Length: 102
Image 1 (spheres, rainbow, N blue to C red):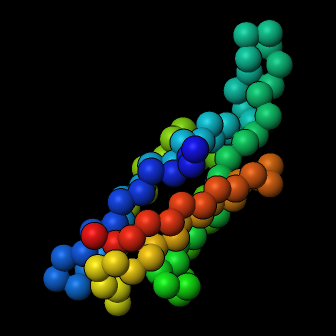
Image 2: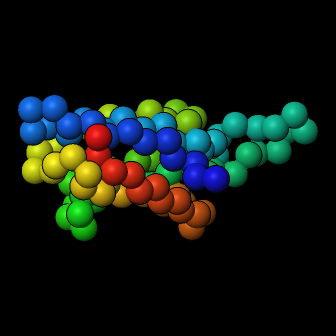
């Protein structure tokens, strides 16, 4: 099961992408109930491609909230084109989701 829920809709030539990424986004500054520091675990890069072309890149850090919501727009796509959204984090984990633009 993907950690990314994404939707992309086109209207008047502008694609609006909305996504929610299921991720803990731990800062490395909180402590658990035993008093131990919870290790930092956060997304460092989010990237979107449409038909193999980069349309969006974001470099994140520990200040982004848990299960972040992302929204952006771009031009130059059509209904049925493939949008690929992916992320990587500071622990080397990653995920990718591909959808067709509505």
